[in-house]
Image (cartoon, rainbow, N blue to C red; front, side, top):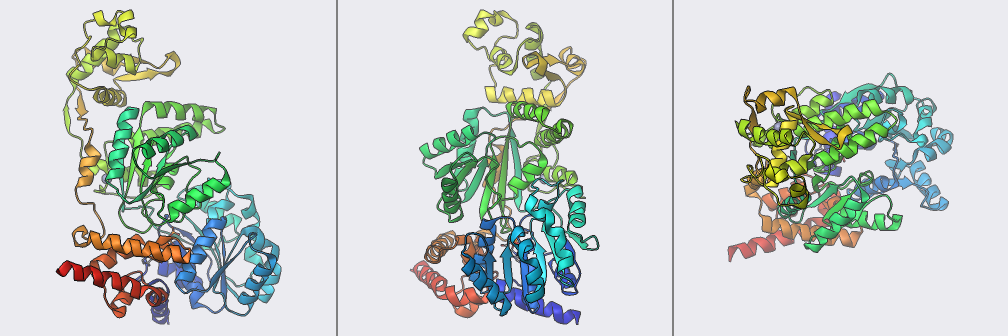
Length: 607
Ligand code: ADP
Ligand code: ZN
């Protein structure tokens, strides 16, 4: 019996989605709800939540209802299902009542397997549907929206607790990518599914590489970003900024350098925002410079990188934002810039917020992550209460273990400059003195006369910045926020200054991450086998099909499927149909176009 169900489920998975096996926990969830049980499914973004309700919907007679908070997400899901030959539809306020009624008629006649709907609409028609329609499952996506603890409470969700009673005998499945424990527990209570079985998948996203770069000036940041995007040519990505103004100036600068970049923030007109989202989804726009307003309704599976221009306010936001990359499981890169200016600005926000103490503590944890000298993934996952007992091998710390040197002399120079000016100066002035600047400000104060003036000329401003940051992290100095941000020397610092103690620093490399990325990226399969010229041609074919069918390129095939295609080079329909991620409906529709391109390419290769 169980073996039969598994076989059937795998057949449906291959037929409609083209996959050979289930991801971790997917089958367990499917088996549980087919048996009639309620379920709470916690998986990270890209973990494969949708399959948990789509497969049962297809296995059982009747139709599944999927509650979703965002119209755009519903539309994407329905488009993707239809492209795979799954009869799906959405009921929403943008369609006429007649259209919506026709869809319900189709559900009634058994012609729809998945019906996507907003919570308010389900609640409005629930009694009638519970009586008249054959509903086999109710899936509540983004279930954290029902909890006040969550980061995205939605009042429309609050009445969904009624569903459990009204649809007697129909399993209810709540799904979310929210990692925090309080929200998880609350979802079950609010939905009246306290008896639901909980399925938790690891929140690790091993395909996303993690890197942090601290203490760069604005100009160096820009150089670094340019370098980074050049290393990701043709790959979509998002740059998150703290302010609207910086999204705009960054986008302007990048366009000036010839990059295809646009700004995106909440104050822009809706029509413009929608157009930008569309372009991004359709691979017509490479770079989005956005405030956190961007990303919620975006399902695009081939976002290949995320840059944080500023440090986010907490690790929850950071993890959610980098999580928008690499949903297709292919390697993706997350780079974060970190500076004191960010910490200062965020500290002000936190201080003024309603839950100041909690927010300050969260900010501290974020800062510790940024400053860490141990595997970053370990820090992240332990923050989310997950056991992770090894180094990941895919973060900057793992790839570039800190190269330490005796920095005692260097620290003494800096602290001597501070001491000789009465600890009345900030970062900039310390560096100006050390580097022997002739700025008016320096000369006017007579700083050019002190003994330390110019002794640090050998190091660049950027390097001094980085080393001062380390001195701060190591507790040799601190910032007197109440005193114009002047730098003060701690007791520990004094011990170093007076030669009673030595201190090790991590060597600063401007190009650390860039060098690291030139090594072949760690991917699921061997990069060398991919014929990149062929891959480009396949991408062009995908784009042409997407335009003709008015769907997003990633819905035709994901980057992962195309990459596998470029390795396997199928030339017959049968070979094409056996590829990973190629469903039956897509074999029928697309095999000829893609195999022709491949055949043509192979022919050229032989000449
Ligand atoms: P989530 O909703 O959890 O963010 P999705 O359901 O969108 O994740 O799935 C993420 C990606 O993984 C999609 O491209 C999906 O097609 C793919 N996927 C899901 N299940 C499997 C599977 N068993 N094998 C291979 N790919 C899968
Ligand atoms: Zn690591």
